[in-house]
Image (cartoon, rainbow, N blue to C red; front, side):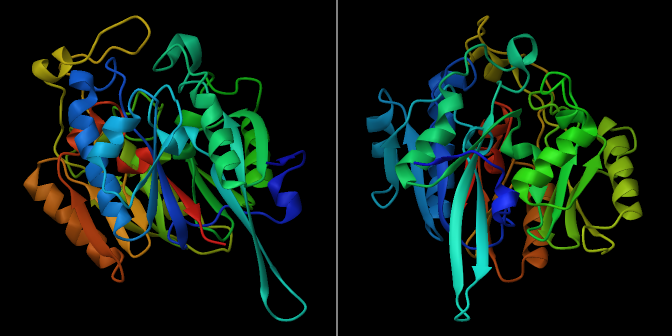
Amino acid sequence: MTNLQTTPASFGFHMPAEWEPHTQCWMGWPERGDNWRDAAVHAQSVFARVASAISRFERVTVCASSAQWENARSQLPDHIRVIEISCNDSWFRDTGPTFVVMRNTSNSGGSDHRIAGIDWSFNSWGGLEEGCYTDWSLDNLVAKKVLEIEGIPRFSHSMVLEGGSIHVDGEGTCLTTEECLLNKNRNPHLSKNQIEDELKAYLGVRKVIWLPRGLYGDDDTNGHIDNMCCFVRPGVVLLSWTDDEIDPQYERCTEAYSLLSSVTDANGRKFEIIKLHVPDPLYMTEKESAGVLQVDEAKARLPGTRLAASYVNFYIANGAIIVPQFGDKKWDDEAVQVLSKTFPSHEVVGIEGAREIVLAGGNIHCITQQQPAI
């Protein structure tokens, strides 16, 4: 595996949009009892459901530790590849590589397609003082191992960045939040302009749009964009929404709506904004909290904590949308309807029991990482 010593954009690489074709999806396998309740047995069942749903539309590789490989293999269909990779937790959106592609038209009229991966630095969403756990040494090797397995060139970067903190349209525009990328627990030595320059150099984008904040209650990630807003096609975004003016989320979504209404993308397009309601507020129960090992090495999961539940946190597979369902029938059904209308050529697949993922701080987009086709 080649470790490239320059920036992706200087080679002509860019991060493609998530709706572009994939060769496969990468996932981890949950096991740590201080984040996933009841030794992760419930979460593992939901992860298997997500992996199986995606595997109807594209190849899936699930990475499990040596202690969990046999368990993962037994719960997953035979056509899903299960490989042994150790990690501190199973958030592959944030610890896996960000894939970038290069497409150059050849003299013969064909196309030369190439792929590489960005290996960002990871610090458990905030480092020793504010992160979710105190040892992330295995997580910091995940991207390198994935790229080694696939024989894909690697761009390493010292900047702390998680894949869930960025969304791109594949045509030069990046969405992110100030709450996350400007948080002093990530890259305190870098200014906003310097971070923008790095995103442009590594993602191949020309314009970065900064929403002020992410979803209310998304404290684990400090407001990742993938819970708040995403592209569905160039010039069109889905925005987490509530009409409840007394919900603290209302202020966040209205400020985001106002900002998006006042800017254009990298190609001068005004945004069409599609509202996607969040479910009614969900909270961790006493029983759910009691099932988590409360230890000093990991962030406490306390009863009464509001869960950062969002339908924007979905995965776009080849021809399908894999969306969480939280058990709130009104908003679960509406999310499927909105996404079906928004992605008319995709099959929308709802994953029941996605509450188990949000209990640990994320959802379907957070546990998946697409590998684009070349």
